[in-house]
Each structure stands twice: as C-alpha cells, then as structure tokens.
Image (tube, rainbow, N blue to C red):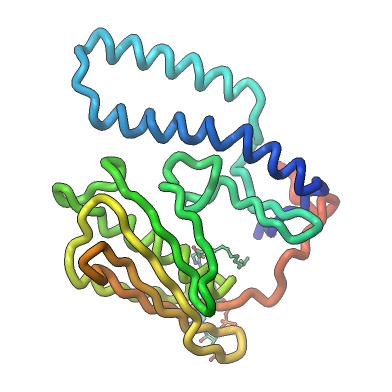
Length: 210
Ligand SMILES: CCCCCCCCCCCCCCCC(=O)SCCNC(=O)CCNC(=O)[C@H](O)C(C)(C)COP(=O)(O)OP(=O)(O)OC[C@H]1O[C@@H](n2cnc3c(N)ncnc32)[C@H](O)[C@@H]1OP(=O)(O)O
C-alpha cells in the first residue's frame, strides 16, 4: 500500500503553494456550480466547453502520474490536498475546514448545488463522506465500520459537523459524530476506526515507482 509521503519543504513553502492552488480550486468549484446552474444557449455552452478544455490542457502539460498522495513535512504538517472532503486542490471538497474544540473536532460547511440529492436536500452520500472524514480525522485511523442514522433530511446550505472519540481499545477506536443544520441534528454517526500498525514510515527513497 502506498503510504504517507515525506516532502522536505518549509512551512513558508507550504504557505506559498497553498496560496497558488487555493484560488485555482475556488475557480474550478465556481465552474462546477455554474455548469450545474447555467441557462445560457447551446452555442455559449459549446464555447465555454472549448475554453475549459484549453485550460485543462494547460494544467495537464505537467502533472503527476497518479493521485496527489498524502504528503507531510518534517514538522508533521499534512498536505492531503487531493482529499475529497478537505483537499485544497480538490474542487469536489466543499472544502471542509476541520478545527479542534476541546475533545471534539468541528467543522462548518456550506453545501450548494453540487451536493444535491433529493430536491433541495443534501445527497446522503455527501453526508456520509463528510462524517466519515471528520470521524476518521478524530481517530487518525482507517474506517472499519461506519453506521449512519439519517434522522431527517438535510437542506442544502450551512451545516455543522462534530466528531469525538468515545472509546479506545487497543488499535480500535469508537467515534461518534453528527451533522446538523440550524434546527438541530439531521444525521448521527458512529464508527469503529482501526489505527494502522505503522504510520508515516515512508521516506522519499522508499516510494514505489509510478
Ligand atoms: C494508512 C492509515 C491512515 C490513518 C491515518 C489517518 C490520517 C487522518 C486524516 C485522514 C482521515 C481520513 C478519514 C477517512 C477515513 C477513510 O476513508 S479510510 C478508507 C476507508 N476504509 C478502508 O478502506 C479500510 C479497509 N479495511 C482495512 O484496511 C482493514 O480491514 C482495517 C480496517 C485497517 C483493519 O485491518 P487490520 O489492521 O489488519 O485489523 P485486524 O488486525 O484484523 O483487526 C484489529 C481489530 O480491529 C477489528 N476490526 C477489523 N476490521 C474491522 C472492521 N471493518 N470493522 C470493525 N472492526 C474491525 C478486529 O475485530 C480486531 O479487533 P480485536 O480482535 O482486537 O478486538
């Protein structure tokens, strides 16, 4: 299995790259929303498609052979930039910004048209994605079993997520969490997460070839 990948860069370089990639991802996110909601005529759609294809070719002129990978620096700063929940280089990510509040991890996210399942409501798989991520980050472990209870539908718009480790038994962590809107909890989650036997073992010389 491909492991975490060490990258020997300074925090200033991480900040510089963040400043370069974040606006690009925001633009792509806007593009996703516009592609869903546009009502322009077919000629304009075709012209926009050609422009987008040109931009895609520009970006593809130099790219990695595979996914971005989960990279980290010497001071432990993680760069999970392709992650679909939090990745700053992934326009699919809302993005969710996770912070710590005492023993809990919390996040506030706005979910727009790209996350619609039933009309006007958040797709259940998106709820699962975001809850899996925040519970997994609380455990720093791999999802073994994740159980969700969709108590009521989640309207598109602002949602709040929480997660907390409630029990630990060896490498097994039980984590509980929830998603809520302004009126209260919409989804509850409980998961068993399994901590890996080894983490962050790979140095650049250990990487698998492409
Ligand atoms: C590389 C690591 C990164 C981690 C650092 C994270 C960094 C933080 C930021 C990222 C956050 C990401 C957040 C999203 C999280 C995902 O998206 S992870 C991706 C989705 N999950 C997967 O693909 C997991 C696939 N499954 C597997 O890889 C393996 O089956 C597992 C879950 C790692 C377990 O394998 P294992 O370590 O060999 O476990 P094993 O020794 O058989 O069993 C150990 C114990 O766990 C129990 N167990 C095993 N499997 C399960 C299960 N599925 N359900 C419940 N209990 C289980 C066993 O019964 C046993 O219990 P005890 O007998 O000790 O009581």
